[in-house]
Every structure is written in structure tokens, then in C-alpha cells.
Image 1: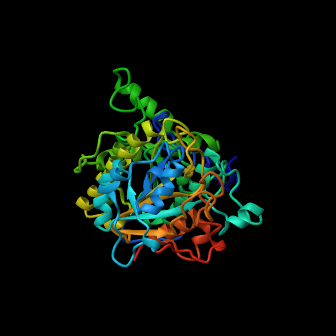
Image 2 (image 1 turned 90 degrees about the vertical axis):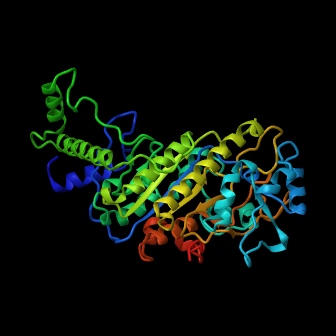
Length: 456
């Protein structure tokens, strides 16, 4: 395989492979990174996806506070409901003129109290009842199956992929990576366009852009090619030569050597560019991940970055049981880590250039199963950053009670806002033009509203 066409086919197929992380110290995968993206930029912007693996229980994340809606919530969750008195200190008061209809009110879970000042400062907004859809769907249409629905609803793997890629498990690219495809050419080092701090995620895989994986401590160097190997300088030099040399014309050998060399170069560049964190982050898994993102954003000039898409994650949200025991600690991690990240962006002067948002497999049932909640659909999520029109609720608050217009069974909320609409809104903010938007979000043509109004 030495022809140009065979090389292109090889690169096309290999682009589906993940970038090796801590499990394999070859920091880049066997795929070429396209330098021929369609757009460029002179300023800096970044997206940060905070993924909550397992399906977050949104009902105890953002809790109804007005008395009538709270009573319905407490009835549905008799064994799980947060006491209303415990919510007094975290009630969210939207900006004047943006109050919810019918005197509806929501409060953050007490464990998310660190996010209330961010909301009040106008850098945090709430997405009401968002989830994967193929097209706008009513309960009548859902019941009659008269519209297209996301495949394999309520399945962890498929709905994780649908959130991240707009298609179920098996997708080769995600909408974060497809944003990278279009904007990578504006970066001096396109390898740092799509960055994961939590392992492989389809969200960051593009059709040409590939994800660069780091740990919470930074990139992972290739062992044995430093100063010495088994105490021998010659051995280290021999190993490095062996894995980076390009003898012959075999396509796999040459491509392997080229990517390994790029891995070595990227590790050296990133290691030299990172400075110690200025802001104190909580010493938790999510806190450490977001600290690394903040450090990479601080190093954006040294890395030649103009547009970046980051991915971090935290697991443990599949609370079919013991929700009251396990969920609060996870919320504490989220609130404290995201508040620290917001503070870091303000301190670095990049708050208006960085937008973070939460995502999860799905929401959960509002009805209790006794000790937890089961797989649902629509959910509540947060979006934060200095460019966000914060201190607002976006979307429509779901109707309370059993068998309402938004309830497709057991309190599973039928989304009234689609992930595709969120993806299109964020892509547009990043600089993707309207003609290229269907490349990032293929199904966006099914919606008359392509911009959720998150940004001024």
C-alpha cells in the first residue's frame, strides 16, 4: 500500500481509533490530523463538556421550590425528596424580567451551593428539560410512535453516544470532534484542538480531528526514550530511533513512525508549556481534571491554540438504589469543581472565552422505586461562562405530577429542548458558520430554532 488513494483510505479508517492515554503511553493514535480545516480564528474560545456518566438524577439536582410544584415532587419521591427547608439557601432568583411563568421556582441541591454565587454573578444558566430528540416531539406523537425517536432510549451506552455524537453506540465521530474538524486549522498545533482528560470519548472524535488524551497530571511520555534506558544513554537513543525511523515504503510502518514522532513532540511542547495551577481546585477526580483544563487554557499561546474542545467526566450516577447515600457526594464534587473552574477562568481573564456545560446519559424517573430512581429521558443541565446570558432558565419547565404532558411514564420527562439545538448553539458561538452547521449537527434541519439564546 503505497499509493495516495490507499494512504487516504488507511487514514480514513484509522481515524476511528482512540488516542492512547495512560493505558498506552503513545499519546496519539494512528491517524493523521488534518491541517485543512475550513475556518480559522484570531481570538480564543473553548468548550468544556462535563459528562456525568450513569444518568444523573436531575430531580434531586435542581429541585422545585414553589410550594405547589414542590408538593407534587415530594409526592412522587416520598422516600427520596430533599426537605424544602434544606433548599432555603440555594433558591435561584433569575434576573428581573426572566422569572419563570406561574411563579415557578427552583433551588439547587444543597450540595451545589458553590454554584449559586456563579448563577448570581450572571455566569451560570440552567437548561430545563433537555435530552436527545430526532425532531420536536409531543407526548401524543411519542405514544403513537408517529415521529422518529432516538434509537434504544433509556440504554446507557446508546444514550451516552447520542448525547455526544447525535447517533447511538457505534458512531465514529462526535459533535465536539466535528467542531474541531472545521476549526483546527486556526491552531498553530492542531493536535491540541480536541483534548480529553478522562479517557476515550466519541464526543471528541472528528472525521479528521482526533482526540489528544492527557491525565490530570499532563501528557504521558513514552518510557525509555529519555536520558537513559536501563542506565544506558545508547539504549535510550536506540529505542527512540527504532520507533521513529521510517525505513522502506510500508504504509503502516511509515505512518506509525510519523505519529510516534508527533507524540514525542507534543509531549515535549505541552510539558514545557504547563505552569502550576494558580487557582486552588478541590483534590477530587473532577477537580483535578478541570485543573488540568485550566492549566492548558492558560498555556494556550504557547500551544498555538485558538479553538479548543475539552472533555472531562465523572461516573457513579446510576442510582437505582442508595440514591440518598451516594448522590449528594457526587453533587458536591460537581459544584465545588465547577465553581473552582469558574474562578480560575475569571482569574486568568478568559471567562468570556470559555463555556462549560454538563451532560449525562439521560435524566431519571421522578417516581421513586423505593431506594432510587430508574432510567429516564429529559434532564436539567448547567451551562456556564462569562459569555453566557446567565442568571436565567432556558427552555420550558416541565409540568409537575404524574401523567402530565411531559411525562411518558414513571416521571420520565419528554424533552422539550434537543441536544442537537444545544450543539448547534455552542458550535455557532465557537465560530462554525451556518452553512457548515449541518456538518456538525446533521439533524439540525429538523428544528426551526437553531439557537437557544444562550449568548448575547
